[in-house]
Image (cartoon, rainbow, N blue to C red; front, side, top):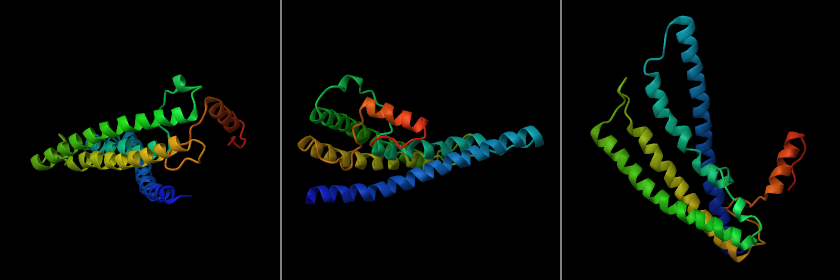
Length: 200
């Protein structure tokens, strides 16, 4: 493994730890919101009581599970993809298309980070709060540019990884998801349904 590949692998490994932690927080937030939702329904139905400011809490907490796991999903290739038109092309061409898509996404994320940061600053300076219990909105709004910044660096790592794969299409992917053919995906789903080990 060359020095460049080793450095990329190390950066990918360390950044993955942050993404894993953020994804864990997002999962915990979903579990907590489910628990609070059940408590709210049972309380209103059985005891005639409700959590004061329930809607406000739900709205602000939604930023946790909506954005904290986005970089993790990008790392593992879990986002919805439409790649039917790319079937049959060479591996180098497929890696090039992945690079193009990530470059476009990187530009969009730069714009989104800037605008969401301005949105956070506006909420901070104006003291913006929710309608019901006057809950400050800036923590949830700050979460968005922070999560997108983590995603931005994931894109930067993937750009390096895709350039490497274009130069060496047969190499083991580093910092990028593996390209999985439709046939391999179907076989994996069948194996999972039958309780077998999926093909590698």
